[in-house]
Image (cartoon, rainbow, N blue to C red; front, top):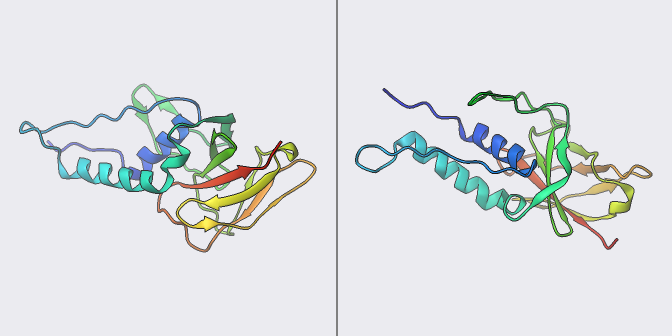
Length: 170
């Protein structure tokens, strides 16, 4: 009988959702009788490692930013089952380390713009980088402080992408 795993996209979405809520994700990596892992599991781990090389700074050593969740879509856990979520471009998961806020974009917007509603005017955004791409243009809308970011034509990752939002001095 062949094992069926979650796709790399699904695992990364769950990881980002859990980390933004101050949780940990435990991966079950089963071994074959000879101690090796099967090809599908190897593929999952390789894709996860490649994604972490690109976006891991928003995961490691971070804590949730404010409540960590933005948007109306969410993971629903039923026992040990989590189905894939039909994410929208309004869905972000947010973490923070020091003066950097990481906004994970769960669905790439077709119009090339994303809006981060969790920032406030007192946050004073100094710079925005798209991990795996570099600096991107942005505008912080006042008085609310929402952040509007112009994204490149192509996403750097085929999975979840992340913005590194540098906050200026308070």
